[in-house]
Length: 177
Image (cartoon, rainbow, N blue to C red; front, side, top):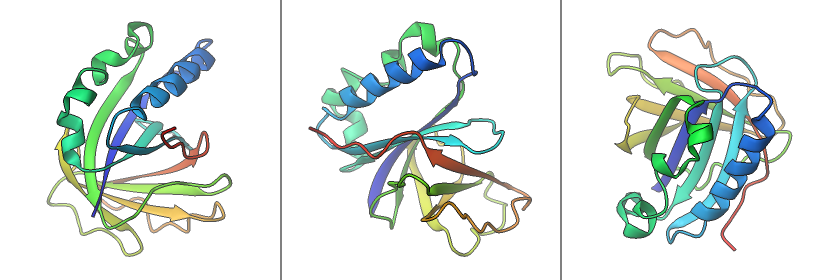
C-alpha cells in the first residue's frame, strides 16, 4: 500500500502565474529534502474545474506529515502570502492505495474521480481506489487512472455523487537529490 500527499487548488491565470510556478518549483525542491518524501509532480486540468492544479507527493508513510522535519518547514503557512492570498479551493488529502506511483510521462494524463459522499455509487471499473487517510479529508474516496498516450477513455463523467478531472503533467516527476 503506497501513501500519497495530494494538494489541489485554484490559482487564477494572471500576470504572476510564471512567478507562482517558479515559487512552487522551489517549494517542491524544499519538500523533497524532507525525510520520507520520495517523489513529486504537478498537474493541471485539461478543462475547467473547481481545483485545476494538483501536486502529488509519494511518501514513505502517513507519519511523514506529522514529523518535526515536515511540520517545521512545510504546511499551509510555508506558502508565500503573496501567492497564498490568491489561492482558492485549496485542499490537502493524504491517501493510500495499491499503486506504486502516480508519475505521468509527457503526452499522457492522470484521470481522478472523486467520490463526494458515502452514498455515491461504487468506484467505476478501471480505476485504482485511493482511500482517504488524513489531512483535510474533503472527499470520501478517490480513484486514479494513468493513461499512457493521452487517451483517457473515460466512463460517463456525469455519475451522481462523483466528480472527474483529467490532468496533464506540468513537469516530469521529480525525486530527492
